[in-house]
Amino acid sequence: MVNTVNEKNMEMKRDRQKKIREKLMFGLFTLCMLAVVIPTLLIIGFIVVKGIGTVNWSFLTEMPRMGMKEGGIFPAIVGTLYLVLGTIIFSLPLGVGAAIYLTEYAKQGRLTRLIRIAVLNLAGVPSVVYGLFGLGLFVFFMGFGSSILAGSLTLACLILPIIITTSEEAIKSVPDSYREASLALGASKWETIARVVLPLAIPGIMTGGILGIGRAAGETAPILLTVAAFFIPRLPGSVFDQVMALPYHLYIVSTQVPGMPESIKYGTALVLLGVVGVFFAFATIIRLKFKQMSHLD
Amino acid sequence: MKGILLSILTIVKPRGESVSPRKKLENSSWNLTKSYKNRIREFLIEKIIFILGITALLIMGLIFVFLIQTGIRLFEDVSLGQFLFGREWYPNATNARFGILPMIVGSIMVTMGAILISVPIGIGSAIFIAEVAPPKTKTVFKLTIEFLSAIPSVVLGFLGIVVLSNWVRISFNLSSGFTVLTGSIVIALMALPTIISVADDAIRALPGEYREASYALGASKWETIKNVLLPAASSGIIAGVMLGVGRAIGETMAVMMVMGNAVQIPSTYLESGRTLTATIAAEMGDTVRNGTHYNALFAIGVVLLIMTSVINTISEWVLHRAQREGK
Image (cartoon, rainbow over all chains, first blue to last red; front, side, top):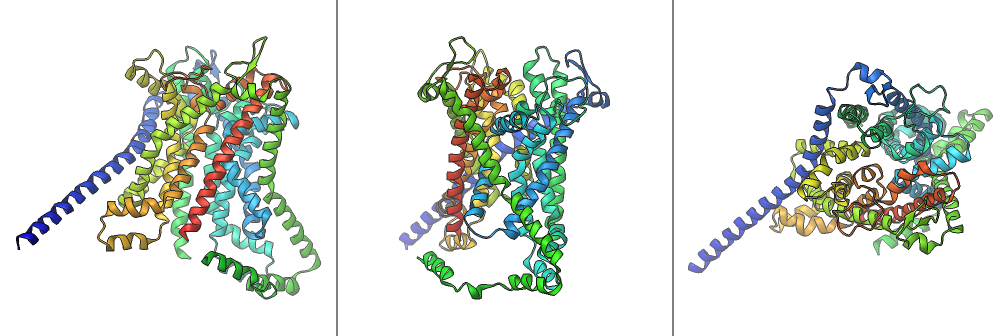
């Protein structure tokens, strides 16, 4: 009798210890999570608070003056817009086409496997290496010079793996029954893809595209080698011109120019973060909507 | 064993009869409606799509060709040993030296530092997201982490200069806050989203039976995580860590801005150091095309490309194996 009571006590004690240990560990995990989330929020908050005073209409639309120490960042904003536009033009058709090939046309085999390995590896190539590649191929070998064209092509290569993988996911998620129904109605394979599969996959493709573009807008190292100018007080006239760009401008004002007023640094950082944030928000909204829609299937 | 049997079965299965209903439909659509013209169109489109399909492969190939082709010319002037193990980097001196050992050490040190910081935090966060957090919290935290991965590295580098370096300087009582440690902290922040999302996927991909069986045996939630889920998800977690390492080695702007870039082999984490990536980005502007310095920077690119390719290939392989085991 005494024995069983003792055992029961022991068991309860062990249970309690177990519970305490579990609570401790879960508390530790929560701390880990907070160690990631809190700095992220602090980063965003810090830049917003410090930069908001600088960012106004004239900061966004005026040329830099006095060795960039006064005035706005208009050319850098325009440059980034041009670069982003060029990147979309090159990477979207290429990436979506590649995804269509991989999901709809490719046969299982060595070539397909090689392509997949290439896509995975491209995703891991450091951005500065893309810069070297763009410098070697587009700037010098193809003779585009340091230009919007060379920069856009380089950035397009950089975000290609993102676009391919997300488009592939989107196309794969279209149920096979849709394809079969279309084929049964006499549509050809391409007609099926163009009129049935792609329209259904567009939200997914757009999410990937926007995320990729957000990445391209923030990259510095590749454009440092292929397009970006330290300071040009005018807007580009053609695709063969150099431009200023937001991320490179932030790099310059925060490291290369002594005596740069703090307000311009924080203002530039906030505008850059804002551009990236807008892309991110769009991609997230489309993805959430898409998730709700896909319940219908 | 079962896998082998299955694969034999799929090979042995007679080819002729395995035409899927979809294939049949595709074939019959030719006969039913399609004229000669349409058939040409389909043929052309298929070829175009094929060309788009192999672009990724083409780009990967071109990257290797262009980097190696340019980088290899360095070795007309400098031996491979001098390049990889030389401790002196004076690219513009009359008696120029091109030793990248300090940069290799710098890259490895900053990556190791970043991994030491980010792995425990990352795995803890992944467990929190996968097993502990209530659904709403989970969504909010995941979004935050995704946004962290979207923040441009130059912004993090900027904050590294204005905030973190001061913090490091004051708390370690140094004369300059631009140290390898500063770089490690910034890079840890950038590697964390990769580690967390891959590890979280790996844990959540485990079959529900694992948890149920463990609970049925009387294990607590923590015991289940520790003794069942973490070991089962270990390949996926390792793959996530390796992908994070790849990201850390390749990171350029942030390390260039916060590490001080002194060409020296740092003896502690509280000294300035320089990475391979920063050298390329910082010095390319000073070079002449096809000069030795230019070629040397491309050769550094090749070294980086090889390092990241090896790391990524291994991690993809681990991940692939993990997925197959999961099934």
